[in-house]
Image (cartoon, rainbow, N blue to C red; front, top):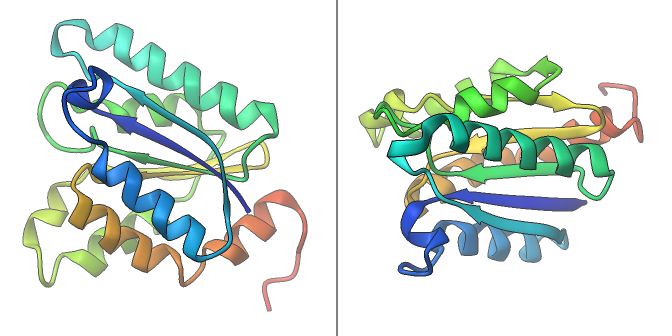
Length: 167
């Protein structure tokens, strides 16, 4: 499986903070034998929300349309603040929403972290690429990846057409 990782973080984009949530996704992917084909960091500059929306949406669309990745995992920008626009940018490029994935991420984390319900992350497909928003915290990412590992391989097989049966 080829994975793209997009981190949405002002400090990460400026090189002022390590991208620990992106690093957690890289480690998880490598443990499973997945290839990290693309990785990027974009700022979530609060004074330029429209520009950030366009930048995130543009990058997601380019990556999905390139055929270079089977799944794109974003981290960051899924909360309730004005600058958290990752779900809006993602919705703008999705062709087919998969709300059950985002619901599973929230439902799994909420019993031990009730603030998980505040995440507005979404998931769905564009072409033959699955796109999933994960939280920005390293802990939230690890929780989300634990949920995804239960069905990600099968979901990607279905989206890419490698497997069409649900059995």
